[in-house]
Image 1 (cartoon, rainbow, N blue to C red):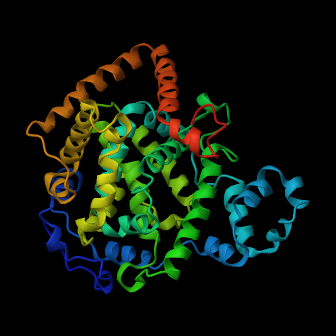
Image 2 (cartoon, rainbow, N blue to C red):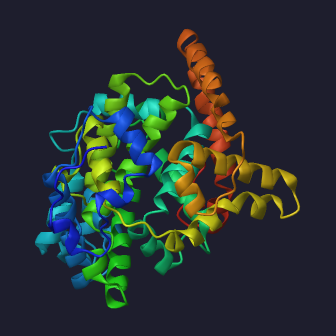
Length: 415
């Protein structure tokens, strides 16, 4: 693996590791061997951009929160029910330049957004509902817990330790909302203005700012970590939900075309821009995304002690749901751990204290199964409608906790 001289900016933060410290990580070796150009070396410019992103938050939303408090409902109303907003006690917000900036961002799709391309990506993204949540749980989330900068805000807020099931299902619900498309919703476009993903994104953006404000008032060490929930860490999260999921589906046998893969990245590019990430920081292509992610992972100082409580909470969910003495729950936990180790490596699996099975690669037997389903779907288009009906039913079952405990989801027939 080749390395060029790294940027000094990245080492202004205690969270940064020398690339040579992480060069033996299996996940980085696989990326360098299979996903990057031959002889690829770290580029100082990428590292500069990542370092600069550590100090950038969501300024417009942070300003609104500091001046006016919660704003999500007012912003939604100002766009989908203008008359009601203008007669409400929140109408004064439109005089605030930060609120007006948000209003302009969410009122229409940007000119660069290709709705047809994004729709193709959305259809491919949600084609395999069970595999999608499998990859979310065992690859995107679990691997992220090895990076303390991503784990620490969750630890400090108690998320995913005391509320692991709800947080997992809310995240999955958001992924499904982002990938809704006209064939399902009847809207004119994917990521419709006023749609479910649009509404959830505004709420989450508000929540991120409130969490950030609380952490900064507390004992958050900005000199070591950068700002909480900063732009670079948000891009990393974006790539967990887009790049890693798309590639994982391919590795498990899903026949995703290059255009569909491009559509997935484009779909999530808009969702991430709506989430408050500066557009120029979001990689445009799958190739650029792997380069960015490789640089980010290469300079993250790993501290498994931070992420282990999150990993344990997520790992133990099957037994908590099915019962501590139910062998099925423990069997599911072993399979889940095997998926994590197979995709991201034993070194991260060991660091997170995940159990290890000698024949864990057997999980890849699902690849020919997915390939067969995909082939049948292409030959018999009616199967696609049946898969979607199955997804809706299964997803409804998976989100029983949310419907029972979360007021936002209580009246929703499907998520």
